[in-house]
Length: 205
Length: 310
Image (cartoon, rainbow over all chains, first blue to last red; front, top):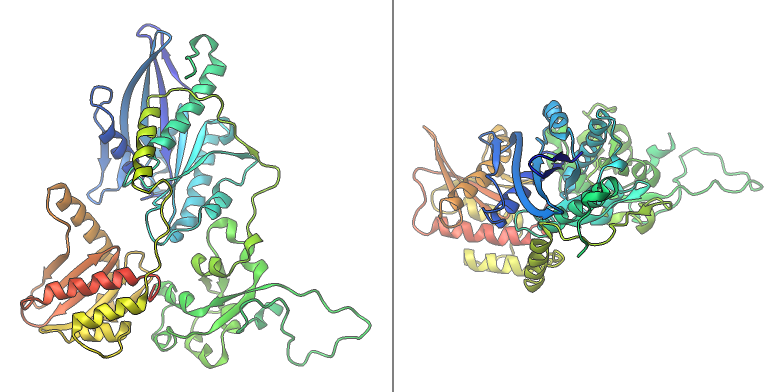
């Protein structure tokens, strides 16, 4: 749920990158951090092990445009993908406004993708949130690698629900479709926010 | 269990194999409906067996060209989990009799993973379908977000690079690759992968070599000790990727070789596109020109990956 600070005239949105271990969540944030002017973004805070595995979470704050007198801020988080760290994932998911589920396209990661997606649904359920109530998109990452499954199989695994969401084939290491994915989920969460908070409605482009 | 009689060579078989000793069908009764099967190459299944199932006898059949036929329903029902397994007993029954013995020591209840890649090579087009009642999410009117401009910039940049959609990787011609290897080794002998690895192991002061892939699915050659082979197979991808990444951040050119000097042995590993070639040195590190030659060999093998091996 977006946090509105009427005193400071701030609206904060929280977007979480979710997905199995080593699927490229942190790589998404690193790319975004590299492309946004330091004027608008804070430091990328990353707590990683020596082997570059996310230990707690990554965090990237982004200040944005003023919408009807309110300054919007986006907080981008990743969760640790390793199965062991479920409590941390639950903590990071608290008050989430939008989710990007990053799937690893490599053949041998299909089962982990499915498990991680189920885990997302379960952890949202613990907050009494149904996945279908949350703005989310799918990112099929690592499309630049040779041993990848076809996108239609990833759709079958992860997007075979009543509500079919947007999906993007991406390569976070090069930046391909990293911002398109983020833009898509941001659009969804702003629309949701607008529906629920009419007075703060921004202007359409 | 009818599905124990699968096996065999047809790629698109759609009928059950009658069990031996089955009485002739009653002429008045309609034949039982054919159970569709899917034919799979045995080789990729054997090459991806978990370590716990590996047996020395398997080495003799790992290059077998045999095919097995499994009931399509058995495979199809598991595809939504992203993981397909069959019991070892079923796999054994489906294997040609002359190579079945190589797996005879395996517990028949053990579940054997079937590589998805091999399944999808042979899966009928309509085997996976999205549900019919899906509602496609309407993204609504386009709003300007803080990320829209960057998304547009990137789309334009990647379109200019010809990468708007990730390109299909060209399938390299393995014969051309081996021809280039011929020129590297200055030989007219007809080369294949084992021959190339044998040539590598014959280079000056090289004792043995091992070729592995980053996904751990492929191993060829050996350093003469199975434990060492397994250890390097597990170690190299992470070690190489992390080292390459850090060195690149430090402004160095792409990493080609890592040499490990132990008290009694020296090993060098080369990495290219998630394919790793490790050599065991004889006495001293590389003689002049050998390191460069090994890297060229690996470059060619990495290009051929997917067609000629793994």
